Image (cartoon, rainbow, N blue to C red; front, side):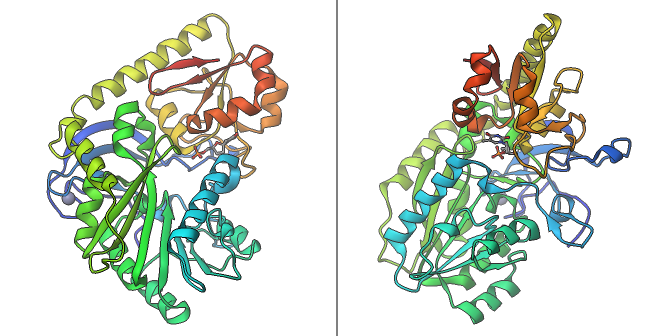
Length: 421
Ligand code: TMP
Ligand code: ZN
């Protein structure tokens, strides 16, 4: 695997030339949080350009940032990922419900469930280990260690054909392969599908969820585009991808997480025991209506994004001119994009509060806003908190009633810039 970014004008799945529809300029790696002593060192930036493939409809980055650039090695040569899935109570519940559904609808006694990119075990922890076998495949050592401490068998590696064959030899084939917010990070989706083919039982299912492109387009959430996210899926693009491997989508369900995700359910075409839900055609038709296949869907996005950026800058500058103090809430990867695209430096955003210990004390890449603990945020009585983790806004407002009662307000950037409450 290479240490350098790879830029290509062609589709990474079918090799057709891409049509560019968005440029966010030079961006740092979203999760490359900077240590204080490294603030004067040169950071890595790449051009964040997004295009659509007119042949297989996959929307994608022109530049692939290799895993090595964001799964940083620590002093013991262990890969570290800064994001622990279980920091959100809402997400814990979300994954519990998904596990319950998989358990009831698809599993039999002793079935194997595999989670690709299993993080700290947020999905697999919900399965009854006396009834089923679970296996996580997770390249980052620190999060995999947390999963193992919960008793979840975890292979600390990237998913490759070699690993897939080893898994089958050791554990057998999987009844269910699940994956959340990971498939979109995998540069070679053809290789991933070959792995699925190796791993999946004849009657097994592959289910995964990732941010859903039509919602990104509708809500102007350009901050979903960052280095780790190479792909932005639709039913159109997934249909094309899985059909290359004699598989088909048999269901798709919208999920109200990460700003709007789609959960796809895929099976082998040869498996006639599962029938294809009406949802699939309904979603394909809706996508066609907005022009996901013709390119019409992307035409006004660039303009809307520029407008959103302007609106945010105008509001923040107005508040500053009135002497208000503005901080950030949730040092999400998405916030690196918003702050760098809108050039929000510590002269506008004093600091960002985040409940992940691994992020506290570090600085946002590019703009160098310091990340602090929620305790500091609670002591500090700022006037406005710009929420970068806007997908968790309900959870955040529920737990920050004291801030609101003291007159604090939240700003969320999408779909339009708004002040709450
Ligand atoms: P995410 O949007 O990718 O899930 O990242 C959310 C970030 O926000 C993560 O670093 C944790 C942080 N966070 C808080 O600091 N407080 C909260 O209440 C929530 C829900 C998230
Ligand atoms: Zn293509």
